[in-house]
Image (cartoon, rainbow, N blue to C red):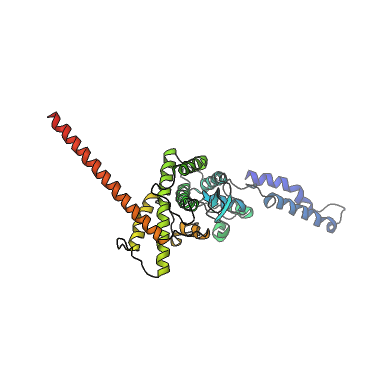
Length: 349
């Protein structure tokens, strides 16, 4: 009410003469000029240079249309550009540097507070609150017609929950870095038995530490790098075997142990999803906000070619042998530990 009162006093001198005219002056000569001036003043106040919040509009009820994509930004690694950036799930575009995520989060939190349902002790007059990307609609909604949000859904601003954005960011970080790992270690090569070399892993760890807005602990960073390093090798084998199957038009069988390739792919996909639970592997898994962002789509966009089938088949055999060796070592260590406990027990008798 106070805002309307002040606005009325401010606009009274502008509206007086267009309404009452000027004594001794022809109305026709100056009324048009005064009305035009009044109209321009109103336009400047409510629709002129873009402002974060206009006169008479509550905080959180209005967001500049150019800022709406920032409300759903997450930090991602741009494999095409080779740099970190803020990616909008609303516009499906890169917005700029990763620092824009913080700006978007602040605005999104303001909108969430405005739209949050009130409790009986809080002065909330409506059960649902709308935020608009248009200043006039926001003003009209707050002061004149609270049903306008239902009629202008195209201008209503929606925000995702902070926890949802955090989960999506983690999922896309896994996806992007598996692609990065595949690309940076050869177009069609597979790593040796020791996987990605230690020096490169250290570089990856340091790079993740430098991106402070990810808020990853040191332990999390090291575990993450180990996981994506292993998964990148698995993805090379999977993509190679899928290509071989597509070219032959049937499911190939490994000549060494007569293993069905579909069974190998399924087993490796299970391991991949265990190591990186939120990863988006294939095009059919791409939902809203992820179009063209799966591992398959990104590698395809970068014209990446998988290793030769023979190389992948041999790598698969090596991984199986390594897995058997690890299991055997664990069984041996367990047996020796049990034997040692038995010896200690009998010595104490």
